[in-house]
Image (cartoon, rainbow, N blue to C red; front, side, top):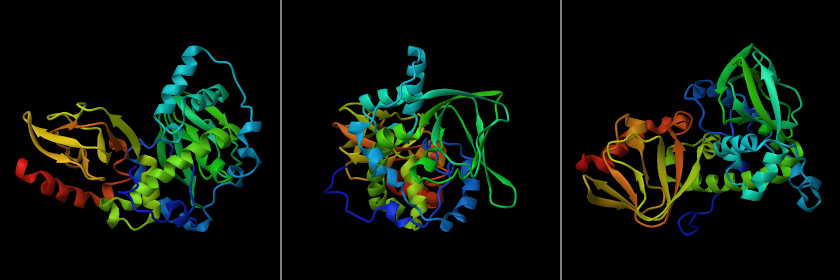
Length: 334
């Protein structure tokens, strides 16, 4: 991220220190179902009851990597590749380098659960997180008046990390919905020493971006912006790469982080996107139409993006502004 284009601001992690997080409200894979958000409203009423604090383990003896030797559980090559594929879908693992990925893959342990079986129960101590390999699972939270359904977990998504991050009991229950679910379990120590540090740094980078993105000035609640940091991913493109083609539907809203993107129609260049925070792909996701333009990298560029499945839990609350902006940005070219 270009430091000259982003002002330093208060960290969202500090702003939300009185808000409670639940295991399934902030899934580490942000490409969660659109149905998730309707029930998240209930969580926001509950988030003020508990202090938001990262486990002291991040700064204590467990953080001495030189003394740490990760557990290793033998796997077939096919299993290892499958785990890596699942990890690629998750925000939490996106900041790991190749060596760290190998350590995490080696430490993961296969767990098989059957239909209606609990994987985690609300109120229990949490010492592991899970990555879904196959099957579907449902997340419920009891606020004192019975269970409320929050979301369904699909392959590639992960859960349980918040109990490790904040050293707190499981704040929700997760039950197997399909006939069987195969999960990969990661222990607390490997998570704390390998995954946590990298994921916190990545989250802080995204939070800084969100604090300074003009589009979000309407959103006042830092909790909502914190959710958005979990929905951001990064991509890099080389000069000449076509990012999005005219006539196609986009599965992401792209946000310019660094570089220059040309906007073309019918093979004619119309204008360029050069400002940090300019975005595209919104025609497909916000308006539901195909894209009217082709977007091409004019040089090596960095983009952040929000997947379509995360739109409802992130940008939908400013949909009115997004719709107006489509007309403002592209009206004279449509």
